Image (cartoon, rainbow, N blue to C red; front, side):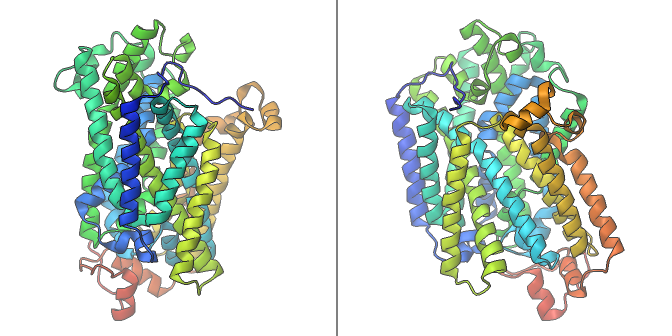
Length: 555
C-alpha cells in the first residue's frame, strides 16, 4: 500500500475550538443546501438565471479560489519561488480575456452548460459528447486537489489520519451538493467566500504583525524579507526554464477561459450586463487573496527555517510537498498564534476547497444528466429523471475523487494546473471561435477538439503515468518521461502553449475546407454581439426563431 504524504511539521492533534468551528461551518453549508434545495433542472443547473452581479461575483471568487489558491498558491511560491508567480499571473489575467471576449457573449447565447454551447453552436451530438467528456475529465483532475486540501486541513483540526478526513469531508460536500444543485451551491459560495477571505487576510496580517514582518500592508512589506530567504525564492528561473514559466502562465490564462464551472456562472445571471459586472466583481474579490498570497508564502518560508532550523527547499533537505501545501496553516502555527485562530485559517481553506468542488461537481453532473443522458440517450427524459441522474453523478465522481486523493500524483497547485491545461487546449478554442467567427463549423470543431484531447492525454501518459504504472516507469527510465523531447515542449502543466494555437489552426483550416455552417447558426452568433438587451429567460436562439436575428454586431 502506498503511504500518503504527511505534513510532518503540522501540529496534528484534536483541537476542540477549531473542531467546533469547522463543525458549525459544515452544518451551515448543509442547512443552506436544504433551504435552497431544488427539484427542477432550471434550479439544478443555472440557479433559475436570477443571481445578481455582486452575489455572482462572490460565487465566482469562491468558485475560483480553491484549495489551490488558498493553500497551493502560497505553497508553490514558497517551494518554487519565482516560478510560482506564473500561477498568479495566469489565474488572474484569464479573467480579463473572459470579461472582454466571452462573459456577455456566452450569456447571450444562453444555454445550460458548456457542452450545451458546443453541441448547439456546432450542430453536433459528437461535439457535445467530446465537450462533456472533457468537462468530466476537468472536474475529476481539478477536484482531486480540493479533496487533498480538505484532508490536510481536517487532519490538522481533528488529529486523525488524512484518509478518513478526506472521506468525511468529501461525504459532507457530496451530501449538500446532491441536495441543493446550483441554486444552493451559489448561496453557499457567497458564504464560503466571506469565510475564506476573512480567514486568509486575518492570517496574513496576524502573522506579519506578530512576527515583525509587516504593519499595515503585508502585501508589499514582505519584500524586505527577500535578502533573508533562499535564492530559490526570488531568483528568476532558478527552479525551471523560461519556457516552462511561459508555458505554465499561458495554460493558466487560457485555461481560465475554458473551464466549464467558470463559464457556467454567466448562465446563472439575468442578462449580459449582469454577466460583465459579475466578472468585474469576481476579479476584485480574487485580487484580495492573490495579492496577499506571496506575503504568506514568504512569512511561511522564513518561519519554517527559524522553527525547524533547516532550509525550506527540498534540494537542501527541507520542506516536503505536503508541508508546502499547508504553508498557510503552518505559518500561523509557527507564529504561535492562538489555536482557535489557526483553526480559523484552516476553516477558510476548507471553505475554499468545498466551494470549488461544488462548482466542479455541478458542471460534471450537468454534463452527464443534461448533455449525455437527456440530449444523446433519452431525449424524452423528464426533469425528475435528469435531476436524479445528476445527483447520482455527483455521488459517483465524488467517490472517484476521494480514492484518488489518498495519494495524488502532484502538489495541489500542479494538479489544478493540469486541468487548466486541458481546458485551454480543448474548450477555449471552441468557445472563442464559436462566438467570434461565424464560419467555424461542425467538422472544424470536431477535428480541433480531437487534436487537443489527444495532445493533452499524450502529455499525461508521457510524463505523469510513468510515476504510477510499473512498465511505463521502467520504459521511461531516469528521465521520468517516455519521450523526453515531448515532455520538454508539451509538459502536462503547460500543454496549452503548443496545444491551443494548434487547435485554432486545425479548426480554422478544416472549417475553411468544408461547407459553411447553416445560416440560422450564423444569425445566432451575430445575436451574441447585438446591442439589443435580452430578457431574463431569453437566448440568441429565441430571437433568431422569432424575428430572424439580423441585428448587426456592435463589438
